[in-house]
Image (cartoon, rainbow, N blue to C red; front, side):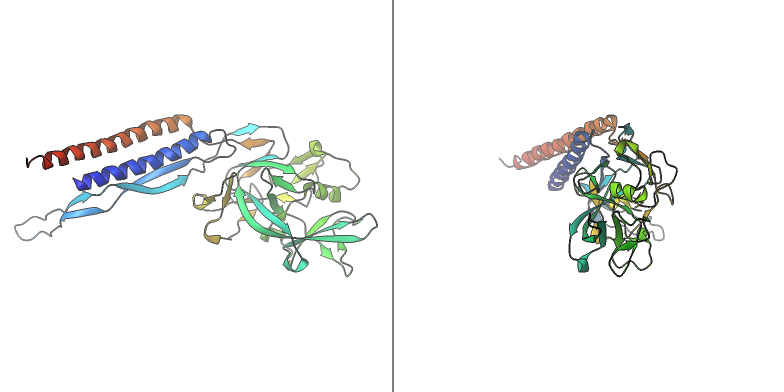
Length: 337
């Protein structure tokens, strides 16, 4: 009976956790790109009452006799199924149709020796100034609610910069960038210590407006004239020429269920995993980028309410086991009067 009490308590605890997850799913039914959670149970250790024996001549094998000691939560999974798209008709609202995540970073301006990349800009007097940045933290997200900040960076609603492929440049002896725009008069990036010239190895923050100005210095534009294609490339004024910088990339992380929820619709790689799976959207199993939409929550209310009913009944049954076990103990105590 003491075992039955413990089993009943374990049932209460496990079903309470399941109800907590269900409540969180329902609370986030309208949260952009939210992925529903799912609780799995497994039985706890079983106690041997009688061991098994092998069959001998004329004697059949004896099966083991075991008593289970209850239930516990084995896993709380994030269900990374595709959510429906909600049309917003806003260019920098992006969704991933398929596998993968947008990459976000937290950047800080640092000295040149610590920099991950350098941002060059030509001042009005014709001289060049360099700003050095370091990416302190990297995150994943499916929430494509992006904005352009005062410095031209493409950022998330929480202020993290969007990482992607940016065109690399060379710098002459006077620290003047070359090889981007013929007039050399617009901002551009250069990854620190880049030897192979492949920016896809380590995405840098995207500065959308400045890149457009550098690619099309003679055209006037606004956000309404910018288009983003399914490969994450930026097109201006319907121009069929694809801008070489920047490109919004997608990381097809192979084990999304292992990502750590950090709040604010972002995920962190577990155990300091720094494996890179960056690449062009709609290639290599990565989903395509869809502009002008946001991915909605994948919570199915009908499923959640059904799970709520079974969870409530499971909790109620576990509570009943405790009540009955208590009554049996009471009967045992009352044998001596």
